[in-house]
Length: 155
Image 1 (cartoon, rainbow, N blue to C red):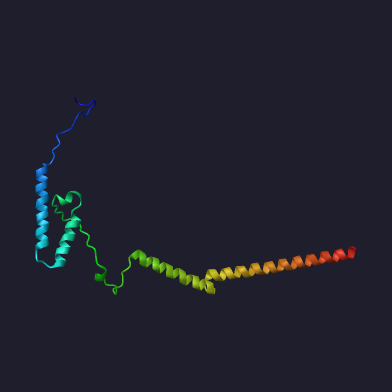
Image 2: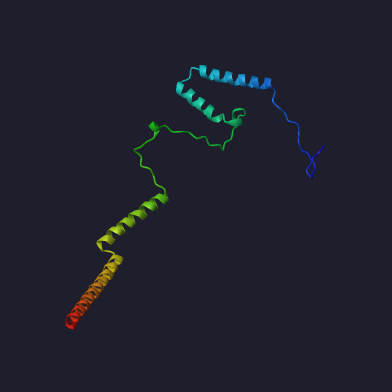
């Protein structure tokens, strides 16, 4: 009976692979691998081809040959193949970040030496505050002395 609802039953017959057919395909693949191993090619080429085959055989890919021109295969590089003497080119963002850091360090160096406008303004402000504090301390001292003298005369 169809299921209740608007859609109805949409199931179809499931087709399963024949076990004998699967066994035959597995034997054919094994024979291909054995033939590739017995070829008198150089060992490096056979190793590379076996690595490629192992990388390709993920999921259904091992059963179906796929020729996709857009697919990019990732080739791993060996450490011995890398050229360390060539300097690495920095991206625009990295270059800008380094320049920004250098400019900041240079400004801080000048600021600490007192050569920037902001540093000079800060030093002037500090000098004014220092004078004001000295005057306030002197006035407090004078008031304290006056109170002591007034206390001596009252006795």
